[in-house]
Length: 479
Image: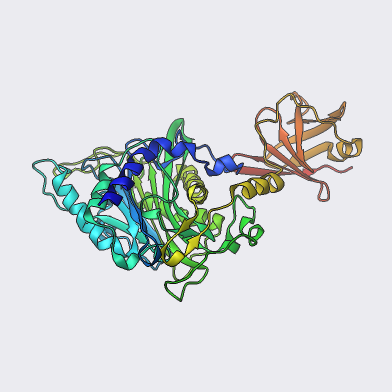
């Protein structure tokens, strides 16, 4: 029992210390989108996350596992609209039959290891019964949502070490604010894309029709092969093929690179109905794919999305009124879901530390210094914060002349590019005040003042303007 007391104490202080660890953005990774305050699923108001982590013993009895709890509205029964989706179904998420039928998530969401799903489900019902989850006049019953990934390469999974007290501990410790990542909760013994994986989170804030909304993701990441690891387009896995591979001295003999699963939970405060949340969940695989996920046959890729909006949506005895975003406004939420999922996976890998588990099997941590170096080498055309608006970089006159001219697009006003005193200038038409183009790399510029990216193609005599979610291509007028 002394092991459990020590582990639970570490988890209780974990959230406050979580921000001291390096996260993916600290490695210079230029993720798209604006994160929330904590860059976590808990940026969605009301969402709470708790962990119970079990790390003890070594050799054939090494325990490297745990439980993660996500409470959509904290410790109270107030169902939220929800939906789920599976890319590849070699896994489990209980409670989804009723969730799909009713459109509501009525219990906490739990994530653990494959062999602990049943116990965790039953323990949630006991916790609900003893923690006054329901009001006095409500019938206390439920179909808990419990998901899993397999940690048997590092954990004594056949020892069934997750117990009722660990489930209770994860639920009781749930809180808002910054949360721990890496080797914590259900992600303790997970591996990902050739390195140590685990639990990760990220968020995005966005504006739709003048109102701010938040999307947050939490992942239990346990999938993929090293050769496929990609970070913001950089083939990091192939560049790190010289690093230590997984070391296996025992366990299942049918393990192959890519074996594994990923569970993703998406939360948002945007007012979405269940059919729209299904569409949100269906975008999760795009974020996974950006990191190198392939949806292999042996992978359980299962996702859940819920909305904390419509506080009084769950009404049993009267007619209710709810709000809903129109479908034509949902694209920014799709993008936020993709971006949050991608970053949460890399956050999990960044936070995870090298772990030796059962039989001495070992998964090594992602090498931070080398990833930082790759980002500096490969990401050269992304605007940097240190690029001051007043910066003046002189370009060769032959390039200035090649870029200069009038560019047209039938859908927009012409663009006039001129040069003066070694600077390239940009104007929407002859009456507009020219603005300076700041060079970022060969043929790539930033429009001074609003960070729009301008890319010239001298061979095709075109220029592309990328701003927000749109790219406009203009053709140069040639005399």
